[in-house]
Each structure stands twice: as structure tokens, then as C-alpha cells.
Image 1: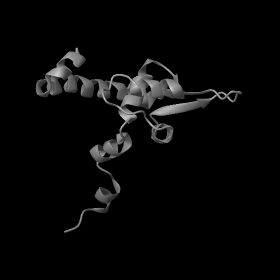
Image 2 (image 1 turned 60 degrees about the vertical axis):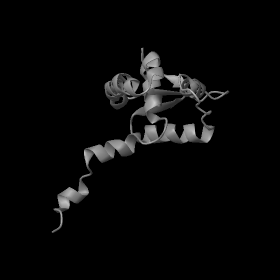
Image 3 (image 1 turned 90 degrees about the horizontal axis):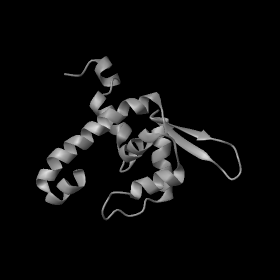
Image 4 (image 1 turned 180 degrees about the horizontal axis):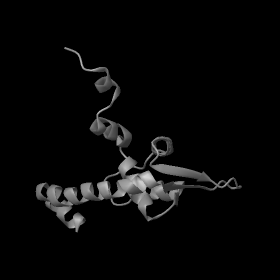
Length: 125
């Protein structure tokens, strides 16, 4: 027994969401942009903050994540067309609507992951 054609065309919203935010840094980039536009170097520095044992993010990886977030409509890239180059990234309306979802994930993690690791309880406060 096969699925109706409309079911195969429509993607599961959970799967579509997972695909959109898959990647090691996408959630953290969107979270950091909630306070306003940031330049590439500021985003890179923000990703290195607050994660114990985190290796530096490779420029190619960060560029790929930023392009993917731009492609999904969560952030926009603004090139000022000046020398030296000045480019800023900011949340779109869609990206701003995603921040409360990340906040809920963060709050869940602060509550439940702290139970598993006492060191995290201190970091979550």
C-alpha cells in the first residue's frame, strides 16, 4: 500500500526543521545574532565563548554555516561594498521568530542536563 501523492510531496515539518538547523554551529549563530547585527569575526569569537574544550571553528565551516542560514532565510548578509570589506549578518523576521525556540531548548538543557552533570548546574545559573 503506497502513500498518497500529496504525502510524498509534503515533507514532515520536524524533518524539514531538523534539516534547516542541522550543523554544529547554526543554533549558536542564530542565538548570538539576537542582540543585533554582527560581523564575521564577532560571530567567530562568539562561537568560541562559553564552550569548554571547543576547538576553533575553521573559517570554511563558519562560511558554510552562514551561507546555509542565509539560504534558509534565518539570517541576511549585508555587504557594504567598501574597502576594506565590511559585511554584517543579522536575523531576518523568520530568524527572530526562531529565537524563542532556541531559548526553550536552552532552558530545557539548563534544567535537565544539570541533573546529569553537576558541573553544568553551575554553568546554567
